[in-house]
Length: 410
Image 1 (cartoon, one colour):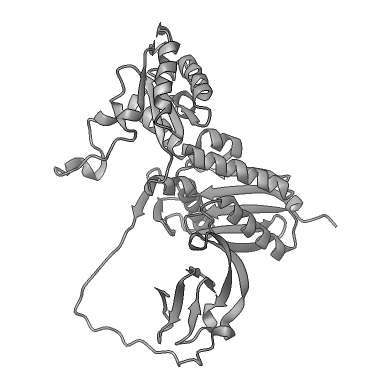
Image 2 (cartoon, rainbow, N blue to C red):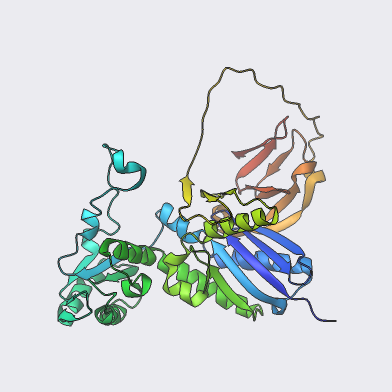
């Protein structure tokens, strides 16, 4: 009898890491959910994968392919937790991000009170270099390597974690950018380096430069993560392919994402929209709205006539408040329990809590078996088929008469 083979899908967000293990022949699915481990996201992925493989009694050698979608890059940008970036450009163009775009696009084009966002890179972390290549790729002014070395010495005192290099017309001839990158690696050996000629080799200076800077901004974290996860997967015995979802709905190798991490910024939302479109096709529903609610962001997509959207929208910290005078419905109160929450205890699981400084043993409860008056002390996890509630150390969960969960400190 032929041995079963499996595929794994991984989705990692700011709060939870989800894994789906699919058997290729029978299409049977096994799922696992763990808390995301911010200090080392790969740990949460490996833990969830092991849990799913244990359910299927599968081994890493049975897995033919792992495809990974993530909002890690998105969250780094939205929460302003990316790297300290330096910007190297052609002399005379150091104020590119200070000036920005002349024309405001989107909903803010009619906002007369609009306040411009701060520049992507501060002026003190911007280095202008004497060099010039024209639009045909011809060298007009040679790269001044001596001035570049002196500038890098000044830049080193600012201790940047990443360096974005964007020279004029480098899409036509990347020679100067590549030479500058070698100098950066020599004089700033710990810095992550992003070249515009590799990230987005197209004309339009502002777009190319800003894309390169954002790639450098998330680069150290994303590259370290995918390289660590790839190594951990190989150590656990995985011989199949490991790929990362792109924003454009394709996939990239781990090595490619490490070089071009900005391509994974909308990785998670793209995977959700593709899944919604596929589900709509199975249900013979070509017009579908997808909505992906995470712990940090919420994403929406519109599929019309079975076609994926070109312009996904994203809500950040979106809340709705309403006040009305209509009568409130009478809610049924649940019968009080005996105060013994052990009836709902399923077991314990190691979970990552920043408050505990790492992994801690968390009690796992079945929400369907909780009763009013039950109190659960953290660290604890409350599970139900469609959601998971996490209570960190130092907090407690109280079940009210309507079976709502209240999490409070102490």
